[in-house]
Image 1 (cartoon, rainbow, N blue to C red):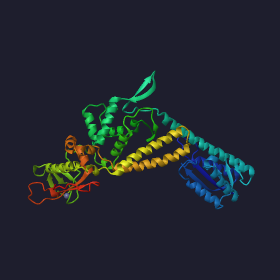
Image 2 (cartoon, helix red, strand yellow):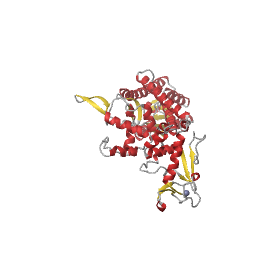
Image 3 (cartoon, rainbow, N blue to C red):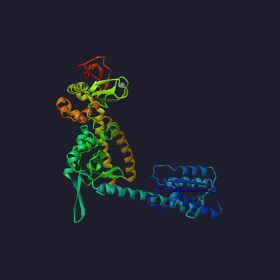
Length: 465
Ligand SMILES: [Zn+2]
């Protein structure tokens, strides 16, 4: 008799199950005792046979084809539940074995599926396996959701909160107003266009205590204000799993706008906030396309082409010109059209709606109104939509100071820090420096080429205005 062996191991963090090798050894021992020749061994590693598992089992499918091709007389598995995903799988296997007259051996017993009693026994085992998978799944989900719904604080304390104890027992986690004020300020400043680095430096200068001692760092500020616990959410393995029992420090809208801004890939490459000049690293060389940096040729602080020295222009003159352009543009009645794309607002509304919807499903699952399976399906779908929208709205993000500047541009500009001004310029326009004619004593406005970003195409002031 020709025997085929099937072994499978699912992820088994506690190491309670048998390894694939152990299963194979036992199955081979069964074959040896029965006098069968093992012709093929099929192994699926780390694939769950549960019908809730998402991944496929390639070896299982090959095995089915092997049996269908009539290459085996007997199939050996270590136990019934290792083999089948659900009753459908069982029926498929049963019919296959039956029509090809293949025996099935597991738990040291061999079944002939053409016999009524053996069909009953294997069918019962299949039912029990299915129930076991259901129970496991429900138990896991129940535990996770229970924690999420209860929203209990655990582990390290989150910055912005303090815990209250009675007789040594934790009663609640409440807002620490001093720390919360620091978080709110950091969030507002990020939205206003400041970098976490600049904010960290300022916090250090003001001697604000850090969460764990030591000094304020870029990563520290960022980590604190993108942590969903500050909007009253419990996080499990990096994902929000429900509402916490503690109150929120930031509102959802602010939180997600800050998060989108800090996770914008364009920002990551530009963490140099020690920059003191308006256009260094922003303007480009109109001749070779290279970067513009600041240097001091002939003693004047100048914007120069970094790569080939194609252009050199006094910084104060270019800065003055660009500042005038920006202020003029933002004082125009149609200034808002520059950066309020309709999609941006719709996206943010839709995001909030999707998150709220997902929350209602968590609640429904916790109340037992929908099944764990249904929740998992809905969750997968909604999370995919949320991720896609977050990505889209991120690209449409603009510094909030821009809104303040409309109609009052000059006064607001005066109040802005250098990083904020640079942020405004980056959002609004591109600057290219061209060569001016030889011997020009003053800045030739036509040698500074400004391209306004989308939404601003119509009737923008040129350098000659
Ligand atoms: Zn150049």
